[in-house]
Length: 191
Image (cartoon, rainbow, N blue to C red):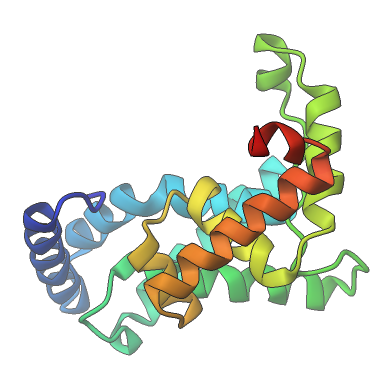
């Protein structure tokens, strides 16, 4: 149910609205289809906020449970996944708040994944990226996380961040430039 071209978007939003309507009236299969269409994106978002596979799985489950329990609060008109990202963000914040951990809430930290290490040795690059991401502003980390890790389109990010699409594109560009500079690759981008 990933959003695509304008004609697909209209059909997808209509299908999504229908599924939400059915799920609100107790249709678990309709909610299951919404779950299937959004699970990977929500999990990726949560994982890159907490950097622990098991914790990410637990928190992602909590996100969907909260969504199911609070479907009546969803306001149709915007993408369902944007509402889920709000729940996911709040769930991660609540997790850190209740654990009283000193990990900065808005820092996107990338952790090595053993499956990736088996395919390619990325340890050095991941460390550089991790440090560089910490040098970005909260908004820059958020826009890059939503765009490249959660695979959201500019319009979805704009709605999520409550900004115009132009502002999101400008923020994304500044974030990529700041990231390149922090990683020491900005000269390569200019050439």
